[in-house]
Image (cartoon, rainbow, N blue to C red; front, side, top):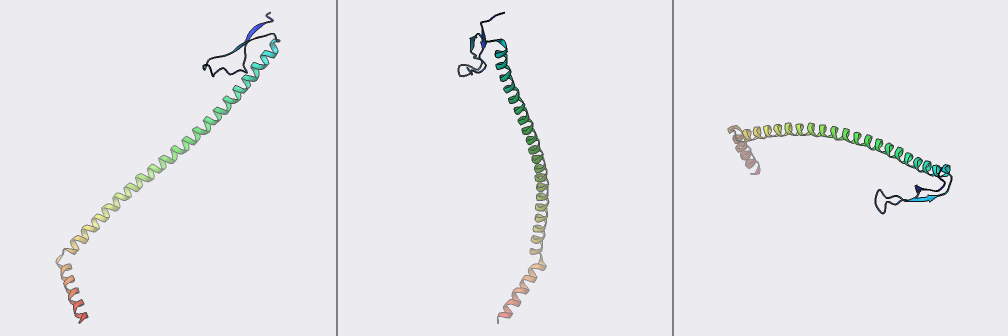
Length: 123
């Protein structure tokens, strides 16, 4: 069994060199101590992985909720646009009615009579 060998230094971050860079050190320690360091690092990675998965699930839920809100708001907007179109049609119809009324002979006669009565009141 090897007593002196090179092992990865799991506590050293060489990513400032490149993303795949690592450092190996010559170690004379018993294997159980070296394995302990690996196990500690693995636990940190597992915890980090679990936390990130949990965060991803939360974000996915938030995205789903926001998509639902967007869908509901789009439906409301569609209904409001339809209502607006109907209201525009009603307004246009009423404007046409007013135009026809104001351009009718009856309306013009009533206007003349009203002016005449107003002039009589002023005297």
